[in-house]
Image (cartoon, rainbow, N blue to C red):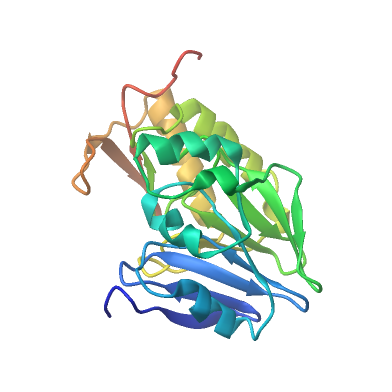
Length: 248
């Protein structure tokens, strides 16, 4: 698969998992009246043309889960793009060549009506300040980007919020666990869609680090140093200097 190619498969009725050459995950959710693309990856091909074909001619709007390079790079191909305003600082931090100034703000409580399905916006800060997830209550689906990681939850990167803030986001989602059964995350090729057990394992990992019962080992993946702990299905990667931030 070269940099100009994309593949897709329908993982739920009207939900296409779109993959680029870097195996970045995007989700095209097709409704009766329009379609919503969650993230744009970092491929180099005609992503807009590809997803418009999947959408069957319906207009496609874009929502960015967070402003890391592997989730936002091809957003420039689309006219109507939504992103939480806090993510502009992340795009600037990493020097991304994406024009975020024209993006429309999206916040907690917003929703996208596609005609026969509705996607609610929930803010889930931690991995980045403005990370969002999308909830489809009727079908009990949660689209999480990297807010919950993909088996490995990265809280060690520049721009990540303190670990205690992340725990509040996780606990809040756990409190809504009766509203979703499947979690479609930002790197589906690396592991299958998650169930609620993954979220609970991740919470236990964060609580263990903050409470001192779990001690991390040196992380071996990527360019940024960090420590990691594993609790059953979830691995938490964190910066030991960014547990509490300015408040405990």
